[in-house]
Image (tube, rainbow, N blue to C red):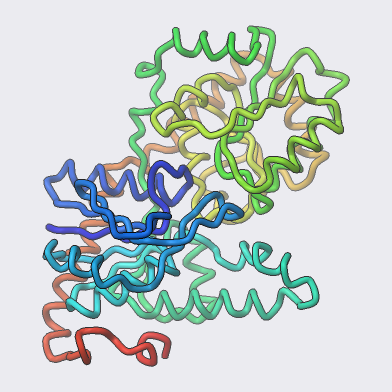
Length: 412
């Protein structure tokens, strides 16, 4: 099968969508499918390197250096026509996402769409420049856009029950396939981790055996609510000043504000900003830590939570319906609601007995077996096969002027 994966973000960028895309790419290749990545770039022309086709776009530094392309490229379409794709799998909404929809219609290819991001949770990137206006119209637009995109595809995929419920609330009538993104669990197994490298990292960040290590991995942005974690450490800092370190791994638009906050609270010796880390090194940082901390409520699945648990880390997270089947209180982690509960939970871990911690760690590993890459692949390929079959049966008599679906049809 020839699969075209269309995504605005791809390596070397690190985020949840990229992680999911890369894992899907690996699994498809492992099972002898031909995979082509169509993504955006800041180049001024279409560039193809091996299986990756990059379409010209504009770099948005405020959005984690993401590139946003135009909605169509004649040269890009020519490259894609030669690929003889069996399915188009769109992983994004705008730019490359619209390009994917046009390509699917132009060449009569079934369109699979994965809805990764709760778009209404990201309206602050727009409204902060429109302070005179209410956020309500923007949120309404995001919900409407989500409904339109979801209803206009061959097959719709979402990563969680929470996202599926949101889609239905938005007015989506399309059948919804709930398929959590899979991960290669073996990457995070302790037996595959180099202990010498771990010791080198401990020296680099001045971590001793007396330190209890907390970690957050991912995009550093307002919707991730990392300032809540910093405030929690402020509450317990004087009591445990020599007993903990908090590692923040990643980059994003909030990093300067958070660094200023840490400096103001005089937590610099305990809270360390690691910066961006290459994807193949991420498991090392999980194994450097004892507990994963996250207070975001904008996740559609939370891949970093799963990675952390696969590494044996219990999780402390803010309550989110999306996580209720993943993080179970006092079983593989703890669920909190406010900064006071978070600080109390942090103290609990620092004072925790070894056997109690080991039980939480072991349970965390067992909890994520259902997110294996093999199960992910089997569910995805079933959706592909269904879409291809239905497309061949139902679309033979559909003709689009010039091969491209009109905008009025697309946005009806």
